[in-house]
Amino acid sequence: MKNLPERRKHRRLPVKMGVICRLDTTGSPVLKASTVNISSGGLLMHVNPSQSLEYGSIINFELHVPPSDGSLDFGGRLSGLGRVVRVEHAVDGEQDISAARTVALQFCQSPHLNT
Image (tube, rainbow, N blue to C red):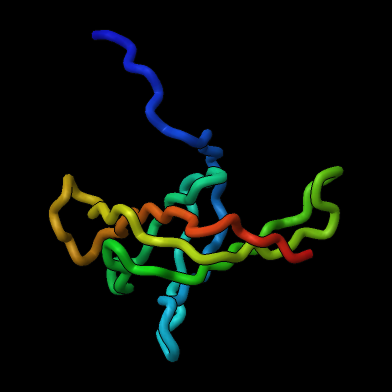
């Protein structure tokens, strides 16, 4: 088997942290998720299957970044606007309502870090 060249534009970092999402509409419910990885272009997250995030949806997101020695002494909040570019179900594409879904989010603009 040949090694295929990397097609991704951005390097992914395996980071697990909570994400709060809200559809970019007034009065939409708050959705909670957990990141799988994050890059400068977007993030991949696990979402409860009872929560509705559909392909093409525009969402506001917020991650609470914990403090780290040297780079972010007090922690902060990373927030921005993103578009759902992929929704995968946990069991080989089957829509098992009890299994978590994986959602890929592409940043519409660079996220903002508030400390």
